[in-house]
Image (cartoon, rainbow, N blue to C red; front, side):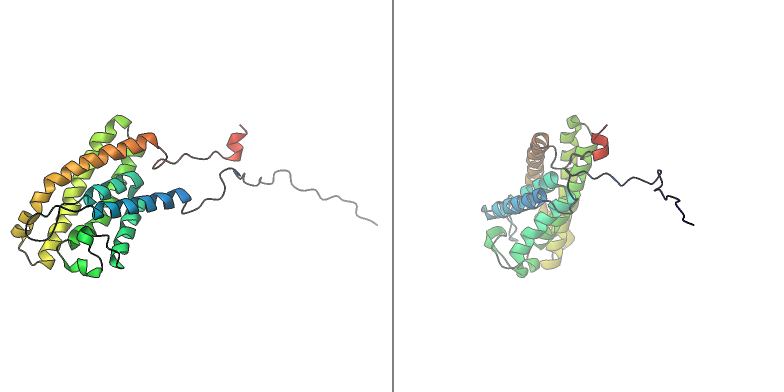
Length: 224
């Protein structure tokens, strides 16, 4: 006796997830991010190459580096901004003369500018996080005041505090003397913060996908 019972596939089996062919596979690092990190690393190098203005007797010059650091974080956000600054520092540590006054090598970490150099990575990450939140979650009319406030706070709390600590550790200055040595740099850095914000806001308005990436539609949504 033959069994001619037919076996059919269940009709309520879950459908395979739709794949957006246009979006392609997700990648942790995309070409745009690599290009932006490279461009802003070059900007940091260029800012350090510009001759600084000597101020005080401790060998810490006024440079455009803080302007470039703040602009890097404001445009790229916390992750890519910190990576760009870290790459810049690594270039200097391995021997390329990319620090102020053509300095290079790990010996700069024992000099008066060590605290400021270390602060650059932290500052780019902090102000980058603030920029990411502001650009993604607030109205464009609020970008300028909020980013200026974030940049000024980052300069004071991160760059200048760590700079003072570096002066105290490497030059063995008392706290009052280290703060006095740092204060002349503060007015110029606040002006550079405003300039960096003006440039960053212009970039985000012209290229809104730098921090706010457009979401790809799924194939299922495209068919609706």
